[in-house]
Length: 229
Length: 229
DNA sequence: ACAAAAGTGTTGAGAGTACACCCATGC
DNA sequence: GCATGGGTGTACTCTCAACACTTTTGT
Image (cartoon, rainbow over all chains, first blue to last red; front, side):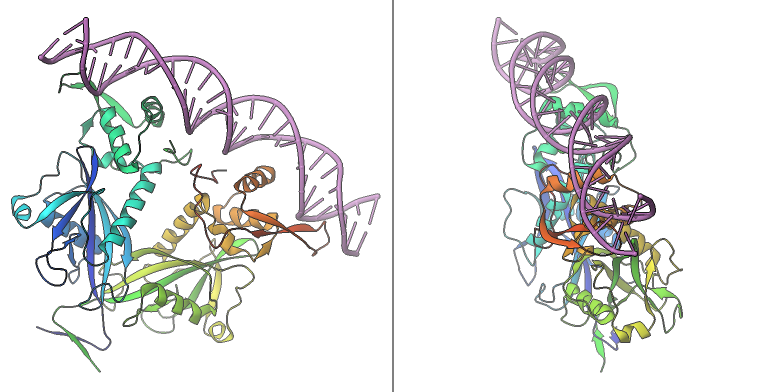
């Protein structure tokens, strides 16, 4: 089967920067390329947008294929279209970024076998194509959104401790935060509810578990920015 | 000449939301469609991305063609790729938004003749395709950026009065601002320099002209958000 | 009893908001 | 001299940032 057009057309792909927190550090999902070009190099997961397929649907499909995870935070990032970004020809890629909660980051067995791995953001290997640029852009966006929205909560399980929440912020912002100020700010936002449960784990005083009140994601209005710490 | 591919490919276009201020109100540039579909309806200017042409270059080219203006603020907005957004077939559009300073908004004669006009944002006609959605998105982005960057300055001539600057903010935010508070905030940012000139025009006390210190555009760091008025 | 993380308040500084009058110019 | 927009300061409130000790649990 062949497709013929009067004018040349680019290929369109989606690429994903999928983040999670592991061991208190921000990680991104990378796949090792099996074919040319950049054979053996690490790259962001992604693939072609199918005929009649919405961009976001394509992104969700790729995400599913790589991680088996549904129902997570996904947002369009930026579209990269430099003519020379792919040596094989004109490929325009719509980049997305996604956040996976730390309790659902196990990769499905098949993808795991195929060279799909979490990499710490502070120790990345060299990447294929312009994927370093895409990742840089994604990290920027993540840090920005962290400050005036509640995206950060997407990285946590349904129930979590305040220290875990603070850990997310510290991991992404790359610096420590004051515990008392952090808790006061969170309390002021009025977006958490206490549960009766406590996290009994380890040898220390158990921490109370909280739940996120709002639906999925929220822009923090009113006072404008809310995490300028 | 024909182009043949093994898999189907979408067309890729760029569309532009070009804003300016006229008579104290935010306006956007629209063109009246000459052909089907949506013949006679108003639409955002835009067109196909050429082979080997960068996305931003394509946007700048369209901008030039419609307005004759070079050297202005241009930023990628979002990519719209719903399969049904164009009745003629699969067309993915990368939307950009642009700001033109109020002293350079005259349209070139040719485009003027061809049904290219400024429209006040508070009195828009019905638009073709999903262009209403794109514009809504653009306005949102513009308002947001206004609050923590200096994009607003892109809408003014090199030298401007403080009242003109305040007018920009009021036009975009759609509400009045306190003159003294506005001026204090601007002064605090330390991004303007006084000139020796005054605007002698009209029948009133002449206003001092200021110049924007920084290069083109700046993110306001440090204190986080800077225009929560 | 001790190790380790959980949890909790106060103070000083800076920014936000509300508010009203005099100034310089052209006619 | 008057109409019109230009230009200026103060007081109150609220949020931010810095800072250290007690509590609860397991071993």
